[in-house]
Length: 101
Image (cartoon, rainbow, N blue to C red; front, side, top):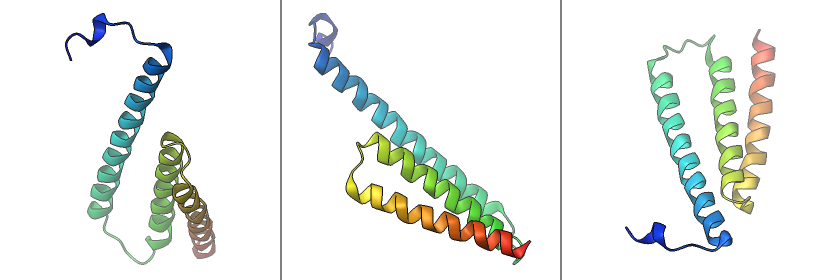
């Protein structure tokens, strides 16, 4: 709307618009990160010796994306539960990596 800047908005509405813009920016950044990780994963030549470290990296990226999206979307229960499950996967991957070395 070209006339939107000329009408003063109440502070609560401005805050809501700014929050929504940051949420969309964060979701776009997470999507870009997912694409980057998928491309890097595809380029790696995985040998059995690299599986634990690769699993640790994947679990870390998953945990970071779940944590950021949980915060950006206002802590929905399903994402919070997925974030907790991701923590278990990250811990298991770290134990596997430590065991293999």
